[in-house]
Image (cartoon, rainbow, N blue to C red; front, top):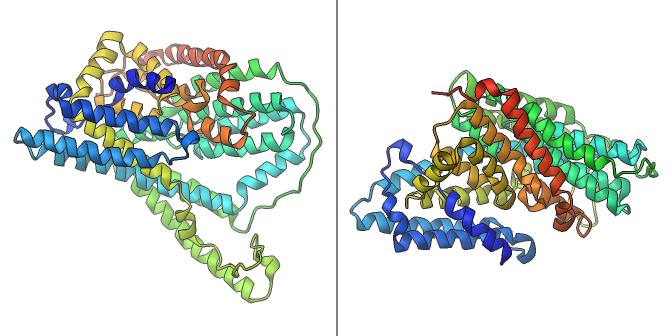
Length: 480
């Protein structure tokens, strides 16, 4: 009930994704209608179920998908009663275009990550770190730094799970170390993802909307670095310099792993080029990059099938057959696509349509006026990060993007920063934190994270201050 209570206030403020900028007329008086209130209540209930996912074991996509459908029924009925059957159709089609671009982009990226995982790229890195015999303090700094550096390319959840696995493998029995190291990984992964379009869903949305260009994300590299470094320095003082025993076996990357890494890099270059030079959606560039992988997957599949039929099982890398298992069919791209995070992809569908539907009832104007006129953009954008620690940052950022408040380029960079790193304040504030709580169950917990929230908050405040100082010349520069 406490979580639901915390949810009520921000949801009434940030449940808005509007299409007014695209010419769809929205009657703000509909916010006070019975269907308007009902739609808001439905979304709050659905999102409460999302927050309780770990306890009730209900996939987060299910409640928001149902809520999305019901909310748009209410939208259609409300506008239909006013004789307007056109606006809801235009609005929902625009929402579907938004989702379609995000879906294709993420599907391609997830497929590459799954392919790299299957080729043992991340496992090889983990085994190398474990077998090096570093001290606990060195492991703390290496895992945090790698989380900060890998998350701009891979997503912050994958990065956090990888580095969290290293922490657990090195010192599973040292609970004190595991807690601070996991917090360090979460903060590092979220901070690293904030200065790259590929590091977080919110940065991807900002990039695709054209509010921040690809190279401009690096303007918040220094604030992001400060956001991680300050709590990391504070927490590192509590770690002993003992050297745990190295154990385990070295893991080798499978055949073709380096070429897939190169293809992933070329895919990123392609997506950026589509957006920067051709003015085409980056999602199309990502799908072209998926085409690169599909041709290489065809080659890998033929090679591994040929090696197996040639009675050279040692050449069929990584295919140890369990009892009753069929012989391998080789590298299969569609198996990698099937392993994409479909619950996450469908969750984004539900969120976009829920928030889009609620915006049709007119919550946008109230939200925009309160945050960006009454509070001012700096305080509003700072509060966005705090809300991201309680609510998922995706609906919050969607609301800001579609409010499209008139603010400087420096303020758009600020909200990109705060939405990305604000989730570190609580363990439930980001996918990285939730994922690691599952991996280090019973050790890294919500309560243990809260003990260090004060240090993380210092990093959060310092990162905002560094941005306001370092990018002061951008605070009065407007995009249009």
